Image 1 (tube, rainbow over the protein chains, first blue to last red):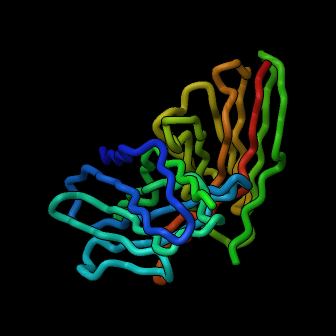
Image 2 (cartoon, each protein chain N blue to C red; image 1 turned 90 degrees about the vertical axis):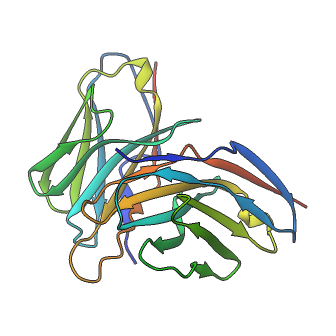
Amino acid sequence: AQTVTQSQPEMSVQEAETVTLSCTYDTSENNYYLFWYKQPPSRQMILVIRQEAYKQQNATENRFSVNFQKAAKSFSLKISDSQLGDTAMYFCAFGETSGSRLTFGEGTQLTVNP
Amino acid sequence: DVKVTQSSRYLVKRTGEKVFLECVQDMDHENMFWYRQDPGLGLRLIYFSYDVKMKEKGDIPEGYSVSREKKERFSLILESASTNQTSMYLCATRGTGTGSSYEQYFGPGTRLTVT
């Protein structure tokens, strides 16, 4: 069974600064997907970024980028130029390509301070 | 855009009541999921369905059942609600086939309180 670990329950950052959220996972699969989801106070889960394990290039979406280290089974999220609207719970998730389910980490509550 | 709706944002029920949580999606997705979200535990999968009338247990199915009579609707049933089922419940969907991007699309969640 896959496991996903987010070791930082809470983090804070000043507006306009950069912050990195950590995620590690454990799997015996070679092909899989990794995701970062954001859950703001409205509770709506929103996909932030997706990484396919067979792609060596790190995914980027505007101010959001990942550092995917397949051998180390690490998948961190970097948020640049943090904005107040980035305040949310962030979840890392692992998805098998052979199935449809996702396994989620415990979540990291990020607060962006003005 | 995928739209996933859940029947209630907030729900308060009494211990022992039978509770129905409904989820409807408009994107013709084959796969639908029910999770519960608790602080410090992330999202845990209760049940999922990969087709009409098909279901599979997730990681924490005890005390729950599901129904999928139509492709667009997936119901979570608490047969006899207990206080330890007080939680946030999230429904999600995912498509299959070529072009599927594997991510799941979520509803707005139902915060259930059992007293």
